[in-house]
Length: 306
Ligand code: R5P
Image 1 (tube, helix red, strand yellow):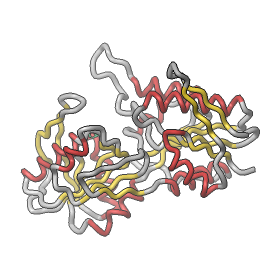
Image 2: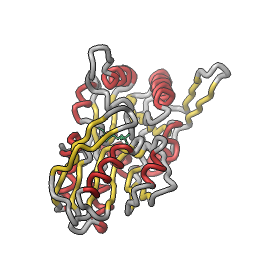
Image 3: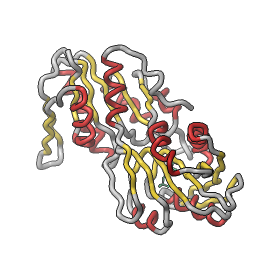
């Protein structure tokens, strides 16, 4: 029996591409009542190893509830196993309390997903430790090798730069795949929309730079990093990230940087008008992972290396 692939409304195009390569998509109907409540209904999944392709990118609350209802519908319809395929996992940045009165939203989201799903496939989680927040198994895939291959022809002697100290391991991974040196920007986050660069660790004078991050949201981190790098004498700049949220004012902010390009994946449906954008598709990676899980084959070479 083939796996049942359900393209959720948050990632319909990506889900359809995954379904196409593995067979056909299972029908998925989502209706909104006048009061805003959702009703979902699925095609047949009885006895099927079922995969729901639905990330929780913005509007994250809506996409999260859709995913929970789809998972419930699949269980109730007799699916043998229900796996959530989340190209993007919301709230992953809230993995600890910053002040005494805060919640740990990453844990709350992991708890509800673990209760609804038998397994999770995730892509480049903001922090690998998030896997431990889930009580169900998580296959944590990485798009870094795909992205590194895409930029390989464009980076000749570039310095790979982490735009904050949290991205250093990711930068080292790119650097090792591409045979390049690394540097890092020391970042201070002032608010959700404001960051400042405190300095650059490493010599970038006269060098081209490849700035790497897991996600671009408002663009503030990339902008602060590139400005600091240019102040330190860097020349051309290329940016690569797995998740392109491009929350306003990202488009305008990034356009002010005169970047060579931004290379991202389609883990979030995205577009940009001010900067050349190169989008690497992750459907083959997700399809490969699903096919291996369905046949109980190892995913060792697909999972994120830290
Ligand atoms: C932070 O820790 C992340 O890795 C990203 O650097 C950050 O979340 C990007 O957000 P923004 O684009 O709003 O600065």
